[in-house]
Image (cartoon, rainbow, N blue to C red; front, side, top):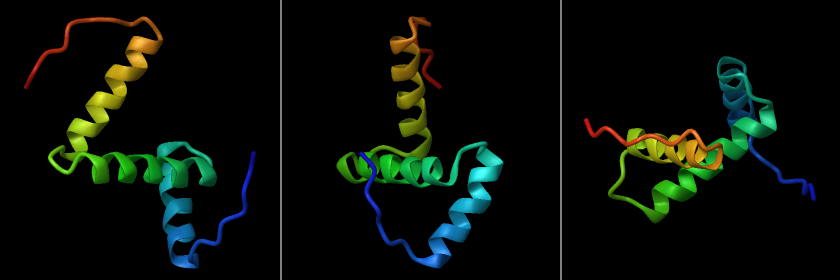
Length: 72
């Protein structure tokens, strides 16, 4: 279900630029930022790099690309 949300023009322009770099749709880029922000807010002890690695690991598990995690 889609919902219309008002977002500042400044945020939309920044998301539009970043979406092209990251090969995401504009909505996809904003959803990504929301997802990362929510995780960071719930886990203030994790760095952005750690959050990304966790998300990559979860995606690999879902797609059965399982391998032992190498720290560092």
